[in-house]
Image 1 (cartoon, rainbow, N blue to C red):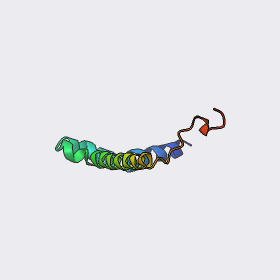
Image 2: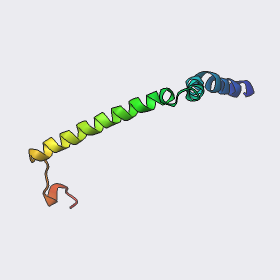
Image 3: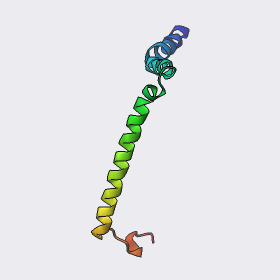
Length: 75
């Protein structure tokens, strides 16, 4: 069993975390390049948030929302 757990450790430390080690080494040279993927995810999130807010505004302008107090049976 010890070999099994050592194989799992080897897989994670030497294979699956290799991109993170590369980013850690790159961060010493260029902070912007090391955080490139973070910026991409932040931009995707901002675009999705903007799209969602525009959709909410469009639905509010069309009065499609049920604002009655008894919209749910438990109220």
